[in-house]
Image (cartoon, rainbow, N blue to C red):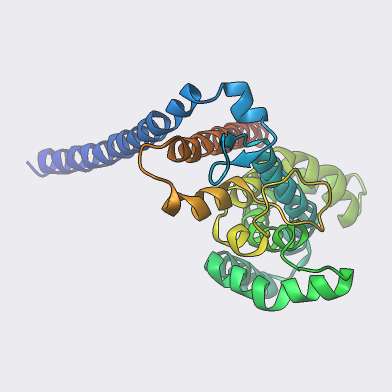
Length: 297
């Protein structure tokens, strides 16, 4: 009888988790359906090529209005590229130090601190950028305004840093100790073992961490709204204002009339952003699978 109730309890828990799994898939599918249902009607106003490759975003106060999001896409990619140039070397370097060099006691301090930085609200980063960082950029480069792609890139790099550090550190720590012991047995130093054994073994997982950091940067809204400058022009320098996709949606959603081409265009931007982040997630999952197979997990 006890075995019967134990088995029934296990089945009940299994069904509960199965329900939550299907519920999450259902709600995610509903979000995607609503997003594309509201975004695809923009193709009745402009063609897909004009929407994606159009050089001008002028949905209001111009006749005829222009719904080209090419400058907005480039703005997102521009600040994300700048953020990764900052976050990748700092993040991977910090992960190597925490996993391979730091003492156990120091590791217990550094890792929670990095995770704490990841919990800071984005509006705090944005406020810091507006009141402290943007004026510094303006003085350093003698600019009329400090709200530029460079300011947004640096702040986004700092925001992506905890994701890259924590995931990369977990991956490096998961490399089997047998690999290191074999390297030491052949006479390799700790530095040679780290660079030539540990990092190649952990490389797919580190790439996964970088891609997740990119997704964090390209999907951020508040910081780019406050710091990037809000100018929907094709970027040619990190010292000019830009307007990424998330900032455009956040800034203009409140002034777009319901059912208007402007509203459909904003949802269309959301569809493009969803496709980009989905692509990043698929690539990250593939690299993560390669890492798990490589280390026998």
